[in-house]
Amino acid sequence: MKIKVGLMLLVLLSGCGEPLPEKGFAGLGDQAAAFTPVVPGRVFSFPADHGIHEGFRIEWWYVTANLKDAQGRDFGVQWTLFRSALNAAPQANGWRNQTIWLGHAAVTSAAVHHAAERYARGGVGQAGVQTTPFEAWIDDWRFGTQASGADPLADMQLTARDPRFSYALRLTSARPLVLQGDQGFSQKSEQGQASYYYSQPFFQASGELEIDGQRYQVNGPAWLDREWSSQPLTANQTGWDWFSLHLNSGEHVMLYRMRHKDGAPYLTGTWIDPQGRAQTLHAGEISLVPLDTAKVAGHSMPVRWSLKIPGKQLDVTTQALNPNAWMNLRIPYWEGPVQLSGSHGGNGYLEMTGY
Image (cartoon, rainbow, N blue to C red):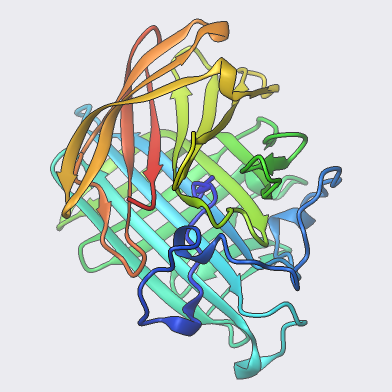
């Protein structure tokens, strides 16, 4: 979701130094009547939908990877690019452009978590997304195709660099994209807030990761989320808990819990079989319960969860690889790799916002 993110962290940067609003996490619950609404029945078109969607207020390109080195040590990598439109008018050229770009990158090991962010104004080439050939970038952080065939996501290069870390990964997949929710219409509330949302959960990643001067050759599964919306939260929703999970049996699971100031959370998800066929999971089919919390940057964070999907014989516990995976950025949140135990083994990513 980011929401991963996979919905995620809009920055309405016109008020850069102000406290976060109480009307939906990071302003995502603000009214957006002037922007294009998200409605059911959209027909997705690729590669065009890998690109920018003008008229919508917020969208993101979001990648996570669960990696191991030759010694079996576990790592996580995150790369996200957000596009935020400050108004619904057609975007002007040059410095008159009303688009704000935000990049987040992070690495996690069992002992260390580093996060960094970049900002850019649209219209001047510092950040952007193009579809032919596909590339998303902010400064020298890049997610771009190396594929020569019809599918630009078949072979990708992912890079980011910070004084404390860097990574250069190749991501490949021959599997289909997955439309989340109702054929890509991903509802976030009973009131109808929603995003357009698709994923590529079948990436395999390999390459080099550097943390605090130490280099590692790594490989493992990776996950891409793409979402765009104009108002993905209600004013009563304070944040979310989002999971993307790679099961050792070959299935994948995406689910999220949208928390409210009062009342039960909005809970939904997707079960993805090894061939890429997706089945929507409704609240009555999922049990998602926090088990243990940790004090992280002054916040009480649920870093161990019980997840059950009885209809799929799934009964697992998710444990954070590093409970201190706090994204200490302009809009702070928790995000890091998790490991599974119970009926299924595997790994994945957890994002928690609004705590």
